[in-house]
Amino acid sequence: MLADIDQMAPAPGPWQQAAREVLHRRLAEPADLMAVFVVDDPDRPGVLAACATGTIEQRLGGPGNPDGLTGYVFNVVTDPVHRRLGYSRSCLEALLDWYRQRGVGKIDLRASPQGEPLYRSLGFVPTVGPTLRLSLPVAHRRN
Image 1 (cartoon, rainbow, N blue to C red):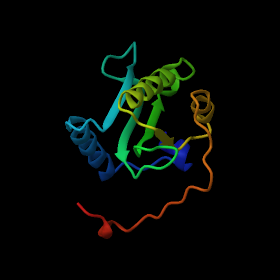
Image 2: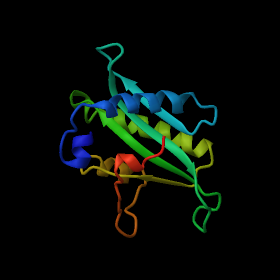
Image 3: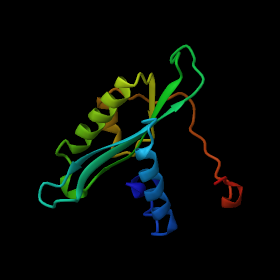
Image 4: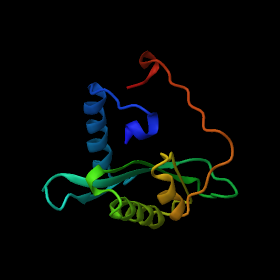
């Protein structure tokens, strides 16, 4: 999945343990601002066939989203042997229901070319303006 977005497979490294720690911590928080929906591999217990992760953040409200609650969908992943079976759709539909139940007014995601048709079929549309990013050196990040 990361290779689909970034056009290259990421190298294993400390980022994996850091990601695990964040996932465990965020899912355990009582604020309920992160969710992961999964479909298990029917032939391999304990192995995922697909998943979708999302978070909620509070932003300032505006005309199109008065409460400012904004969702972000990421890590929509399907094992290659399970693609085209509706597993990612099921995970995403569950995640979208989770957002609706919490009053989220706007949901963003970054689509890979492979995932874009699915996202569009669920109502996602392109945004106006380019997406920009600034990556700061690790020394500038706060713990």
